[in-house]
Image (cartoon, rainbow, N blue to C red; front, top):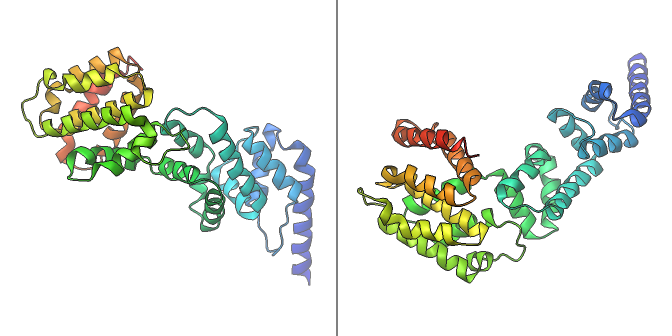
Length: 310
């Protein structure tokens, strides 16, 4: 009896504190108490925190009026389904209401929501997945690609290094650089007839040169000209991605890499894109043994020169 009464009193007190906190949620000094309450479970089978408290905390978090550790946010969503649903819908609203120019920006928005991290919990994953599935496939693709963006870099690398069917991988790259088009079906629809002709022409040209050990800048003039001459931003970034990978991974690419990349970043607005790609690639290759040391060295040299431009 005594133990049950103690649990009951403890639960009622926690409930009272949560009610007391509702109008004070956004006070900076209250954050430690909010975290403690959200992580408290006690022995009661019923929710001890009042719904108004949970809703108010979630609302303040989504509007960035308060900062909470991930563990507290995950606990909030696990114990209060309406808050998780609202967080998911809030993310979708941001994705459709903000102009996003690349999937890197989409990834930042998605990861900032903490939903990908929270989705490691099966219960949260099921709810988020159900909400995405009741909407268009585009949102689900955004979410998955943003969570596993490194796969795209690997896909772009495999386009050149492996004997693969190029269309599906070109589709992924096109989606990466043109995420805002809701009517994208395959590569042609995504980047337009003119755009895909340019992409396929550059890809075919690079594949013919991939095994050449003795390359000159002149050999790559056609590819560079297509990059600097296109008016479509997404096509320009996609082609730059392909050429950069060619310079990093082809037999003779290292010989002309610095000159080509310097020319492209000087004549186009792609410095940030190139810098980001080189940074991601360097980070990935540093964890894959000594066979990549030469490429990693080149990457570091390129990054040092590009740092001043970004």
